[in-house]
Length: 254
Image (tube, rainbow, N blue to C red):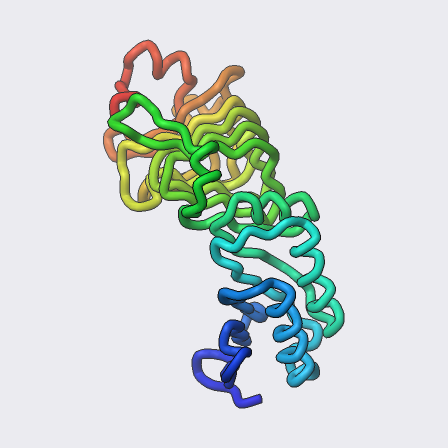
């Protein structure tokens, strides 16, 4: 197939226009458009067969948008890819249901954007801080998994090394934070990161970055209780939760 400066030319027409396939330096990006899932899988099979030698052995980042898939649906697309020696490396989705299905099968997933289906409201909670909303995720995030939301995020579980949590608001982890956390991702300097055990591989608030929590701790010694990270005097700092509560900074008022 013809190679272009923007990657592989999909050269799709007719029914195939719902599927976009692009070759990139780090693998293959496949975007599944609207339509019946089984029909799309048949079209994907046909597209890959046409260029089997070109794609063979590649790693695939699959974009499915807000489409809701269960484990059987995800496994079905994996089998199509496997037929052409392709490996499912990452699924990007705006659906919590799809995200959980991918995670349950042991694959890497990125939950991005806001899903519009009504049932998502069941896991979005109102706070008493200026109408701020929280997205609640229950479970552990493994290496390669990315949770990205505009709402503040509450993780009830662990964020393991190699996992990422990114929010335009606050990030609270009711567990161990050992992956990467980026609060205030759209520039909110009042955002915070809090965890029962704060051990991130990288910590970010707005544009401020610390390679680890140790770098942001004044004492360089971890607390035995929950900790909170925030911007103070243009420095990303980490303090014990109880110390923050005693009012040395009103981090809870934004």
